[in-house]
Amino acid sequence: MTDSNKRINYLKATVREADNDTRIKKWLLKHYRSIVQSQECCRRAFHRKEVSVNGQLAEETRILKGGDIVEVRYDQALVDREKLKTIPVDIRYQDEHIAIVWKAPGLSCSIFEKAAFYALTNTTEQEKFWSPYSMQKAASGLLVIAKTEKAKDEINRQYQKGEMDLSIRAICHGRLFPDVLDRIKEQEKTTTIQEEVQQNNNEKSTKNDYNNDNDDQEDDQDNMNRPVTELLKSIAIVNITRSNHAEYLTTVDLAIQTPLNGAALRKLMATQDRPIVGNSTYTRVLKSSKDKGLCMTTNHIAITHPTTHERLSWNSNEPDKFELLRAREHKFWKRRMDEKLETMRKAGISMDASGGDEFVDDMYNEENGKPLAYVLGEKEFCQLKFKVTEACLVPRPSSEILVQATVDRKPKRVLDIGTGCGNLLLSILNQSKETECGIGLDISKEALQVAKENADRLGIKTAQFVEKDMSLLPEAGLGLFDVIVCNPPYLSEKAIFKHRLLEHEPATALFANDDGYEWYTVLSKVAPTVMHRHSKLVLECGKGMMERVQVIMAGWKTVEIRKDSHNWDRCLVLEME
Ligand code: GLN
View 1 (cartoon, rainbow, N blue to C red):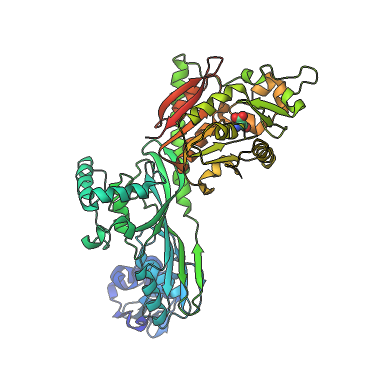
View 2 (spheres, rainbow, N blue to C red):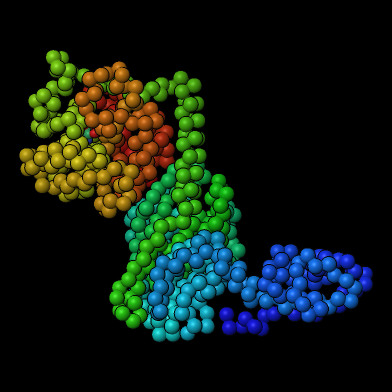
């Protein structure tokens, strides 16, 4: 802000007779709008005591007489600075060398840079704001700023050499597999990205759903066709949301190989037919969304401090609009799905959720009304004896077909969601020679203790157990699985009134909201985060529930349906592509 005194709008004028008895503010706005700019700015100029009449300070209510001499010294720089003060600059860290600031989405970068420069302390050594990378208007997130020449050189060196960690969170159209990066690398081996881009662009331009306004300067051709390894270190899937327009929306964390090339990154996602949600080059607008802004935010930075040489890192939450967008898409998707189900119901297709009859078959000790398995403390399943307590569901014979359906796929890695006493997982590990690792997930610590005991008793060493709510699966960091097996809670709450005996078993293992379908919806979103292209999802369905589960799992391919010994469609095997 070195040029502050050069930016004065100066005026000295004599009031004509024709304007006799005019209020000064009105007079200024009528004849000299270019100097006082707007009503509001004019009012502020009076407050700043920039207006005088006949050599004396004037109030905005002053009535002018013909021949009065009006003088205005309108300080443009002061005005700019006042405006900049109103721009939010979220300072996450600063010392005399560097600063980390967070830019909100929708703020023009040049205005934000000025505001940040003004809001930070000790920026005198630099002429202006300096950060190794910049952001588009609609983008948001963390920026690193150098305050001194030395810091600038060092940060720039780290940035150019790829020694800085930078992560970008983005929402893409469609479903992405966690192994997408390997897939892109494979593609690169056979074809160059350049050809791929060309090919895809031709396809897309006929569809005309990309925006081609060139809004940034990053688009130089040399950089655009860098191999993926020079753009990205890894892709992690954070969230998968169902959507009517995009079928799915995938939120990803992209670990960037600096120097960052935002346009090449957007282009890469577009060539995978997974364009980032946005309104700029190589992104695609999400039609149902009112907010047309880009869904891209820098959410992690790590650098080595230029003077202390300490490794420092910062994380930031995604902007609120990301979750708003996902929640909205989910809501519309759910609404459409419910409508579809209603149509099916009207067409006479039975949609009643399982009444729980299958759960009380010959397993109750009539005397004290307790399941026999709890009285004995064990239950046989797939010819193995499992310890059971009231912390876990009693294994049912009809679930045994899930074990066979899994073993038949010869999986190397298996995940059992809602493992309970571990009956499914341990039976799979017992039968499947190919399976090297099995993980049992459950929300209940007590159930997992029982499962661990069962693994020990049965001498199964390949099982691990993880305590987690299934909706938090994407953040569990468990890697990818060849088969995910799940017997989710699927009884509607009504079942408990019908079968009071169910009172003994843990309610969280039996009942689900949405008439019993709640966890199928959750699975349709979380399972893809741990699946590769050929993974299978093996699901148990309640009596009469399978058709509706298939509607919920729309977009997945039914590989096979297995019936239980009562001839009910019980086991659904699904695949994503
Ligand atoms: N996986 C266990 C079973 O199938 C427990 C399932 C559950 O608790 N819903 O028996």
